[in-house]
Amino acid sequence: MATLSIHFDPAVIARLTSATGDDTVHVTLSLGGGSATTTAAPVVPHGPLAALMQAGRLKAGSVLTFTQRRANRAGRAVVTAEGQLIVDGHSSPFPSPSKAAEAVTGNVINGWTLWHTEGGDTLDQLRQKLDAE
Image 1 (cartoon, rainbow, N blue to C red):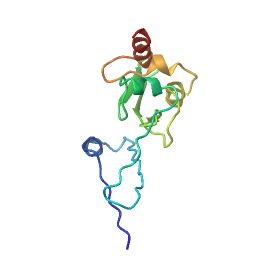
Image 2: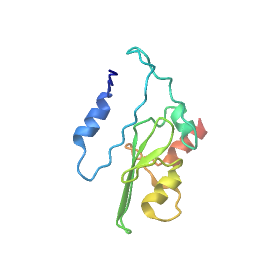
Image 3: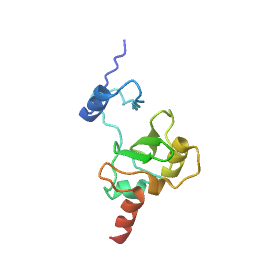
Image 4: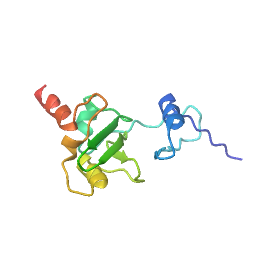
């Protein structure tokens, strides 16, 4: 009989235990080659966020948020290892900050200036800092 062994990073466990009934929790499962010592090949980010991730300005698992008080909306997204964004309430990842923002707002919008990191910078500010180096 085959055995399935799932190992979670402590950050994933912390996220799962702090989730509320309104949160969407996404878990990615990678199947190994059958050996307990098999490690998955590293995922290389691609797409619009790849440069920020490769420079260490943005990491997989980073939480991005925005608030639009006038429109009474807020958004939350998590960066995947592939450089996509998983938006709360949506099952599929979005390939760009703007597509992720559009999913929340319902409008075409510049996600680079809308999404903020936990440190308060917008993605556009991170990109400008990287370009200045």
